[in-house]
Image (cartoon, rainbow, N blue to C red):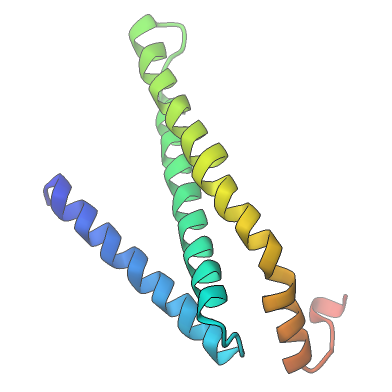
Length: 120
């Protein structure tokens, strides 16, 4: 699979995951399409950014920082980690934080049995 095919497949997978989240949110009672979109895209993109940052971290850990060429490669991975974690993931997390409790937790508490999970 070439790079473009890989990107298209990744995009299809991401869209399908976002749609799945959105459909679940609708079933849970989130009727506002903008709120559903913000939550679905935010969760899917946050998780994707975290996975990508994790892959760069694994690659960075394989580098030997005591060798200049390897340190250069590690620096490239560190920069990518920074962009994904402190840019994309952080932005989505802040958006999600504003909606999560009121749109997910409170809604599920109202729909559920009110019995705590795991004996909490």
